[in-house]
Image 1 (cartoon, helix red, strand yellow):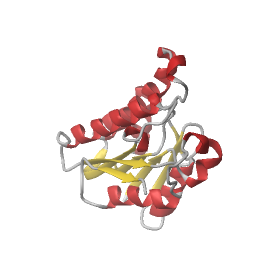
Image 2: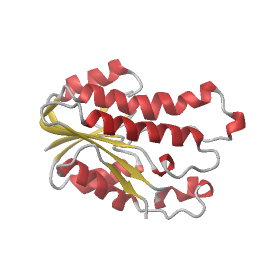
Image 3: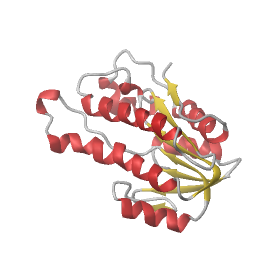
Amino acid sequence: MKIAVIGATGTVGKAVVAQLASRHEIIEVGNSSGQYQVDMTDINSVETLFDKLGKIDAVVSTAGKLHFGPLQELTPEKFQVGLRDKLMGQINLALVAQHHLNDGGSITLTSGILSDEPILQGVNASTVNAALDGFVRAAAIELKRGLRINIVSPTVLEESLASYGPFFYGFQAAPASRVALAYSRSVEGAQTGRVYRVWE
């Protein structure tokens, strides 16, 4: 298959590329690096990317920024970080990708454990992740041409504990290589509308 990985240079993205590259042709896409660049918050940038890519078989997104901070200090501007980037950015990718994928192709997005297990200072992340899970379940029943859409919901990564560990006391971390297996299940399997939780 010909697979575009958005966020290919990030921790999860690199693991996904490593998991799939031996079996498929991988196109690495980043915000400022990779074979192609895209600003997924800009629908025109997303359209331009897919015009360049031509017909492909799968799209995987491991990208998206969130805001972490106390509820009392949240402002609409801070909340927009997650809404504009991780939520609408990935939805933009899915909306455009559906018209550029080959029949039977797939879309895989990324949410996270905070949709079900809230933490202090994680209101933006919980809201965005839950919305993404809902989007995928709803989009799955409307996609045409045998297209599939799933989402991977990982726990905190072992590789990210140095940065995010204090937010996730008591959580079982997972290595990026294990999280990448869920993306393989989504891309190379047959299911749709699934939330693949990688939590324990």
